[in-house]
Image (tube, rainbow, N blue to C red; front, side, top):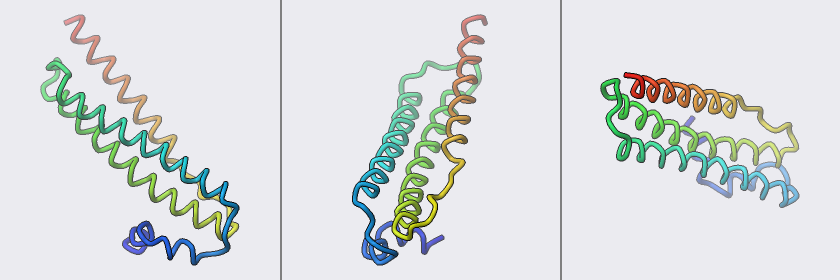
Length: 128
């Protein structure tokens, strides 16, 4: 694990693997990485907004749970983004198949479940 993390911060290590790819593929990989970072930042911003601006909800500490969940999800997305970028760049340089990931599906499911829970909380507050 520490070896993988060390590789994230060592561009010489990345360049020493395989052969130099068409720069367009590396740039596309970088744009995907930046899109994932924006997603992580949006989740973090949502967590901060929930902590600061949501009114008290009908379930005790639900606001804090929502905020913490969004903050943790945002941090997870950021870490996952850099790991996927590094593994994809390595695969491109080695001419291997790009790494598969279940993370986008898991993230979409987590966001959908979170949204449904929020709908339920809003309905409970409106009806109760």
